[in-house]
View 1 (cartoon, rainbow, N blue to C red):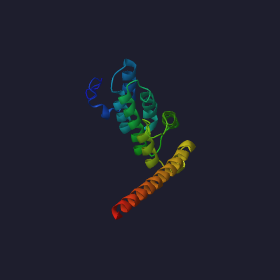
View 2: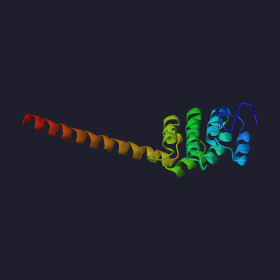
View 3: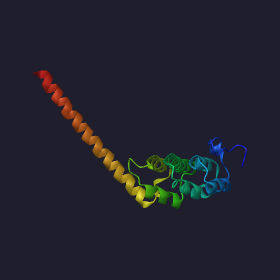
View 4: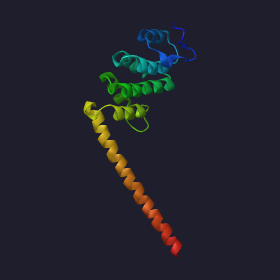
Length: 156
């Protein structure tokens, strides 16, 4: 174990740059594997970090799974692309607003060129923009009606 990596407390794991160390910790059942996956995203080539991030996305601890999805978003930010297995893991989790993957998908949409996105993510982009526009129109109409009622009550 490297001196800077403390699996029990999670200290120093954002600096993890050794995929084999992550694999060993996974086999030992260590805590903070999601945190360490962020470290891999920062410090390793995408091809090396990707399978470990995907494995961390399946951890039983919800907080560590959340960190794994943060690692996927970090990988998208730093590399401007994701691997097919990371796209598959994001798709399996789902792009909905209540999904644990929502921020990772948002980072992917912000930092990966549209032409490189898989078809399902391009479709999700279109659907989410249409939903947002419809919600905006609904709120504007609601506010207009509310303001109209207030103006009518003041006239009385």
